[in-house]
Image 1 (spheres, helix red, strand yellow):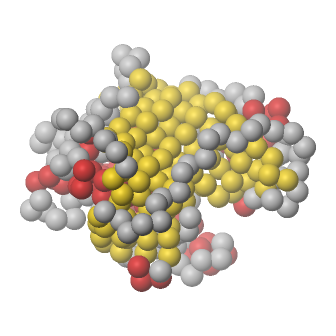
Image 2: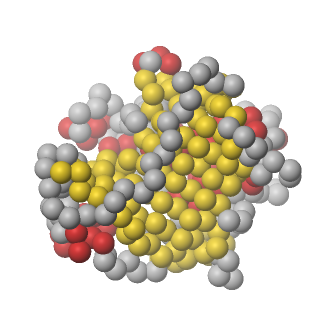
Length: 286
C-alpha cells in the first residue's frame, strides 16, 4: 500500500436513482415486515405512505469495490469491514435521486504484520443538493501494514458500559436474510455460495455486516423512537464477529443521556459479541 496513492484517491461523483421498490427491498433485507400485522413495520415495506429506514443511506451511491483496483496495491482478499458510522442530517426520501462524493480521510499504519486502517467518508446529497447523511467506513487491511507513514487515528468509538443493560431487544434473523439483502447492496458470493464461504474459512455463508447493522438500528428505533425510524439521527459501531442467517440477535442497550444510547449485539446461541462499541443518537421530542 502506498500512503499518497490511497490518501489522494480520486473518487468520481456517484449518482443513483432509487425507487419505492428498492426501499422496500432494503427494509425486507434487514428483517422489517416480519410481522405482517404490525403496521409500524409495514410502514417500511408497503407502498402506501412508505417511509425509508435511515440505514438505507449506507447502501446508496456507493463508490464500488475500489480497493480491488490494482493501482491501490491493497491485498483486497484480506480486507475486513471494521467500523461503520452514520450521521443523518435529514430524513431519507422513500424514492428519489441522490449523489455522493467519497474521500479517504485517514490512512493508518498499524505496523508490519499488524495491517492498516483506511477510513473513507461519503456525503450523501438529495436531488436539490440538501445534505442527507454523512457515512464513514473503516476498512481493516490485514495484509498492508508497515508502509512507514500514515495519519493519526480518529477518536475511537467508546466501549459499552460494564454494567447490566437497561434493555435487551431480541430479534430473529431470517434464514433468507442474506439472499434478500445482497440484492440491495453487496453481491459478494461469500453471502450466498457455501463453497466460497468454506474457502474463506466459514462453515456456511455469512450475513452482510451492514445487514446486521440495520437489524441493530431496529432495536434502537423500537425501544427509544416509538417505532419512528426518522427519529434516528446516528449510529456508530464496530463489527466484532460474523452473523449467520437464521440466528437470533440480542441487542443490549444502555441509556446514556438525552437522545443517546450505547449498544452491543450478541448471538446468545454462540455466546458471541458480533457488534460492539455502539452509540446511537435520536431525536427525543418528535
